[in-house]
Length: 140
Image (cartoon, rainbow, N blue to C red; front, side, top):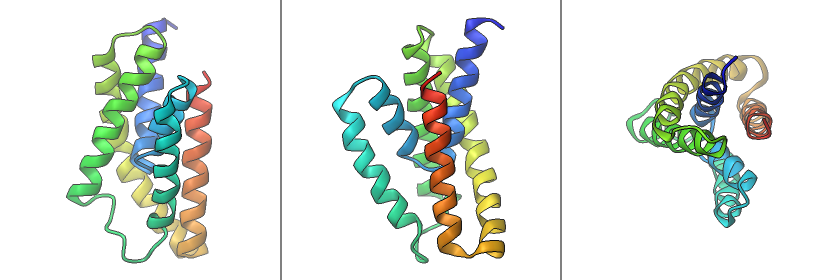
């Protein structure tokens, strides 16, 4: 498999995580790059985990949530692509595609998880999946 394809797949996957949680992939990739912004965004990610579990939180598929996730996917895709020596633009495009997929797949998974295990456990499981995937992707 070519390095370009690997970089695009990493960008797509990290974009997918953006669809699950907006700040988690950005925090992960910036922490991996050794940036102080990684710590700042880690705090934002923790705040997002708390807010996401509240019943009055707007859906991720709404205009504001969806836009934030797409932008996060683009930035995360760009960052992971350039971190591996690739071009930023293909990484950003793959990140956007991943974010769109992750947003709607995450929404469907969350709805099903709420039916099975309840709202708070579903939120925690979603957080753990996003953290685990982001950590796995940025360490590749």
